[in-house]
Image 1 (cartoon, rainbow, N blue to C red):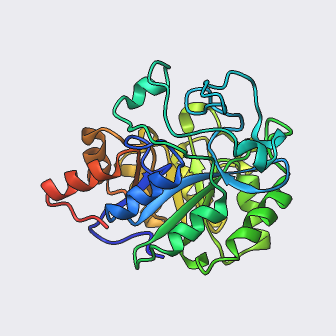
Image 2: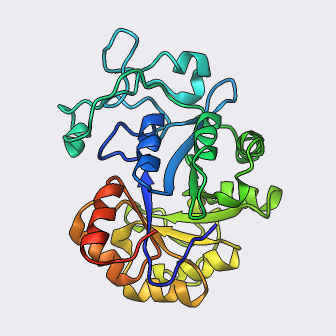
Image 3: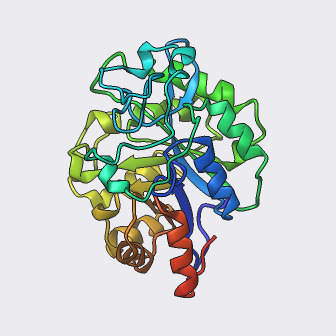
Length: 302
């Protein structure tokens, strides 16, 4: 797995290609492969009957999920309270463009008959689209501050790896999470699996001995120290929110041998700024837009 390539920018499709097609759908991931995008970022949750599946929110999102009757969901429906069979009755083929969320993606194309995928279905699709530059960024959704929305970290890692190990893709996978308890458990149980540490300074998750950092002490209160901390934990990459970084923090990360992949970068001026900062990879809702920008500007990408 190539996480850093000198003079190149790695393009990651976010939740497939959320700006173009409904998020976390199998057709969204097929779109990436059809456009020669060889990396993606997606989200893993667990159903009531302990099936690993692809979905971002702990609860069914009312702007992207319809009932069998074709109505947008409006109940507080937790993923972890539903069996996978129950979840498979919901439709994620479109976005409600009248909603606040939907107005962010007015050009997203409506599909038909798209259901919440199992992790195994996505990995099966990916295994049919192998390439030297393939990177599978699986974000494990977990929280240290809310109970009963996922299994505990030990069980969650066990369930997910039970599916991953059915495929010959381990050397293409990097796991990420905002909940560093998950990454700590992954390190203990599966030390050979690559881990990326997600951070978001603006959401107040980053402070000394934060539960999101698995109560790890920062060297000081500056975000500049995060790459060094991640490196000491054995991380293979740092995944910060793009507005949290600058050239200095990227250099600090590179100085300790840690690639930087930023999220979620959608506007062209932001993409160019991140490339100027020297980031290794860009996670974007518009991977084809980034590819075309790179080609217009003679920027090397992979």
